[in-house]
Image 1 (cartoon, protein in one colour):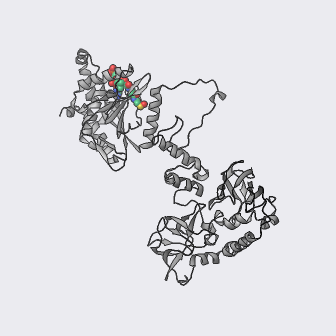
Image 2: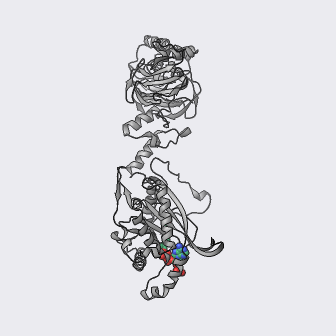
Image 3: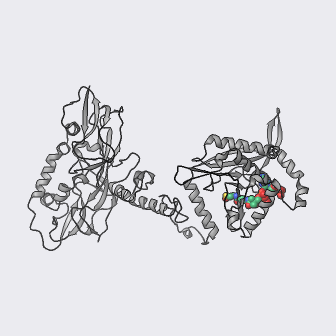
Length: 558
Ligand code: CAO
C-alpha cells in the first residue's frame, strides 16, 4: 500500500480552472475512474476521475480554488501496484490506459495544432473575409449531438462567444467562436450528429482576422487553413475537456444533480441562480438558458407567483395555449379579478408550501343531536346553526392546544412568528369567486356568536361588501364543502398560514361499537399543513384532538 497524490491532469490549454465541487471525502473508497472533483472553466465543466482504486486520505483542494495541471487534488492510499513516485500519476495513468494515440498524447497533439497555427497565415485580407468554423477536436468522441444553436444568422459576435452546444453521453460543451465577426450562415441544426471538422457556420470576419475562408469539408484545406487552426489550437478546452484525463469520464453533468452546459452555468453564476433549484426542460432534464430565464422571471414575479394562469412560475415551463376551436366550438371568457387573484394565490401557495394532508373522520352523532335540539332557539335568535361554527370553535381550541399550527414562517427561513391570537378564516363560495373572511378571536366567542358572524361575513362576501379588515389576520382556515358532498379533499394551505381544514359531508355510517354495528353520523375532514412548520406527528395529534372535540362537544365548554 502506498499513499500518493492525485493531480490535475492535462486539461487542454486551460491555465486556471475553478473547483466547483468535491465529490469525495476522506475515508471514501474509490474505484478507478470514480470522479474526484468537478472543474469548470468558462467553456466546459469536467469531472476528474481517479486514475486507480484506493482510499481517500486527504482532500487537497477546496471549492473555489483555481487549479491547473499538476495541482494536487487528493492524497490517496492505493494498492501495491500504485506508483507513488509518479510525477503526474493521474495524467500518466490516464495516458497509459488510453491506447488511442489522440488521447494518450495530448501535448503532442496540441503541439501539432500549434504548429498548424504557427503556419504563416496567408496574407490577411484587408477587407472582410469568410471563414468556415468547424467542430474542433472532440477528444475521441464522435456523432455528438447538437443540442443548442447559440447564435443566429446576422448576429455580430465576439471571439470566444459560444456558437453551438454539443452533447455526447459524457459531456456538454459550447464551441466558442475563433474570431469576432458576423454569422453569415449556420450550417448545422439542433439534433444533428456531428464530428470533428463538421462545419458549424460561416463567419464573416474583419479584414485581419486570424482566419480565412476555406471550403467546408475540405480536410486538406482545413488542416492547413489558419481558419481551423485557432479553433483547434486555441480552444481545445471547447472539445471534451482534458482528453488525457480519461475523456470517458469528463462529463458536463457536473455539480451532482445539476445537468447544464457551461454557457448556462456561466449565465446562472452571473445571475446568482442556484442551478440545483432550476428544473431542466432539455433532453434528459438538461437545464437550458430558457429554464434559467423562466426561473428568474418566476422569482421576479414574487417567488412562485405565475406570470399567467398557464405558468407555474419558479422556472416551471408554462402550459402552451392551444387552439381548442380545432376540436369544437369555444368561447373565451374573461376571468373576474377575484378569480385571477385566487388563481395566482393558489399557484403561489401550492408551489411555495410543501403540503401534507391528513385525512380523518369523527363521530358527530351527538353534536348533530344537540344541533337539531337547538333549532328552535336558533330560529328565535335568527341564526342558522350548522356544524360549521362548532368546527370553527373546535379549530380555535385545537390551535390553542397545538400552538405550532398558529405560526407563520418568516421569509428568512430562520424564524417562526408565533401568534398569540386565534383568528379563523372561513372559505365562502360566491358567484364572483372564493373569498375568505375572518372570524376574529374565535377562541373567545361562543358558538352562537361564531354562527352569527359566519352568516354575516358570508352574506357580505356574496354581496361583495367585505372590508379589508374582514379579510385580514387569519391564523388558520376552514374550508367546508359539507353542504355539497364528497368524502375528502386536499385543501391548499392559505399561506402565510400553515394549516387549513377541509370539511366534507357528514353521513350516517355503520360503526362497530360495543360488539355491534350501529348507525353513527360520521364527519370526514382533512388537514393540510406546511411541512416546513409542522411535522407529521403534530398533524396526527391535531386531527385526533379536533376529532375528539367534535365527537364530544362538552369538551368545548371546558
Ligand atoms: N355535513 C353535512 N351537512 C352539512 C355539513 C357537513 N359537513 N356542513 C353543512 N351542512 C349542511 C348544513 O347543516 C345545512 O343544512 P341544514 O340547513 O339542514 O342544517 C346545509 O348543509 C347548508 O349549509 P350552508 O352551506 O348554508 O352553511 P355552512 O355553515 O355549512 O357553510 C359557508 C357556510 C358560507 C361556508 C358555505 O355556504 C360555503 O360557501 N361553502 C363553500 C366553501 C368553499 O368554497 N370551500 C372550498 C374552498 S377551496 O375551493
